[in-house]
Image (cartoon, rainbow over all chains, first blue to last red; front, side, top):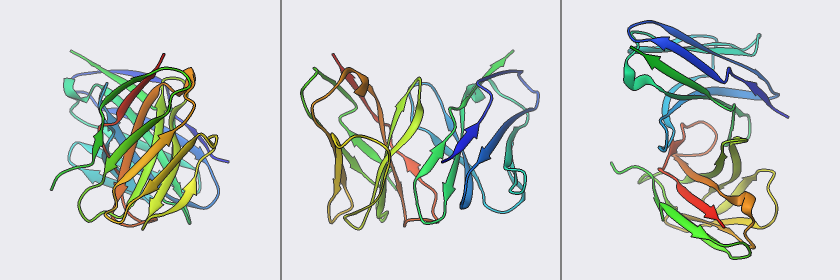
Length: 110
Length: 113
């Protein structure tokens, strides 16, 4: 089966940097996704990693280490609107469905 | 380009009833996946359809079923509703299957009384 772990909650200050970690144990790994979900809304796609390394997209970056089963999402210059849940999801070979962690609820405080 | 749309957005049913939820993918997308989201379990995969065929199914009872039409629109059906079926049902579409990013619709909030 798949096992995906993320911290349940995090708090960070406006303007700061926060790193949300995700560890996974799975066979046939074929990519890791990060989604942002505001309360009562649909998850929105943030980033995708399939090879080791860092992917940067504006204030958001995502890192993957396949050998360690580890990823993180880095959010810079935090804004109040970044308060949301951040979902880590893994896809396996031969399937298009995603296996999600339970999500990390990030609260940005002034 | 319009995003994924789901109807209805909210639904209240009673135990034992059945319900049908609808999903229209992004234009040109051929793969549709359904997920159930609850506070306790998070997002869990229900099933995936591609070119009118179910490609993959999650670990849910047979009361949960779905189908996809030739225009890629998809429906899911839940029969004999139980209180535990109360959840946000999310549909996600992708261009093809296996390599493409999934984009989610706004979901249908189902409440079973």
